[in-house]
Length: 114
Image 1 (cartoon, one colour):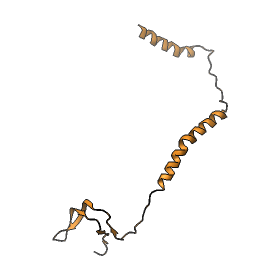
Image 2 (cartoon, one colour):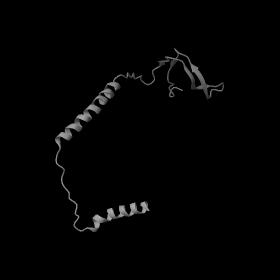
Image 3 (cartoon, helix red, strand yellow):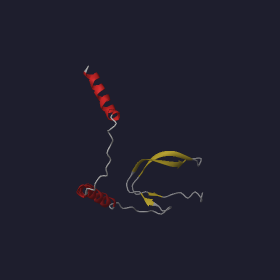
């Protein structure tokens, strides 16, 4: 019974303003609130300022070295289970797996020369 009364009350409260002809909405422009604006700006600076500083400083700690195409490189540490192409006894490339030891050199194959 209380559920039915609650449903009726919700319906009446929703329809009552529409039924009353004298009920017109009042619209006003909001007044500027400089104190609220300053408080929000300060809050954003407190939260985002240090975060932005950490992100900017954190990105400068990476060192990138560009190696020109075709230049050999020396392997710094052993690469385990590297997928490689090996040439079989008939001269055909065959997929294989091997450990590339530290100190070996790797260089690209120029397909134009073959």
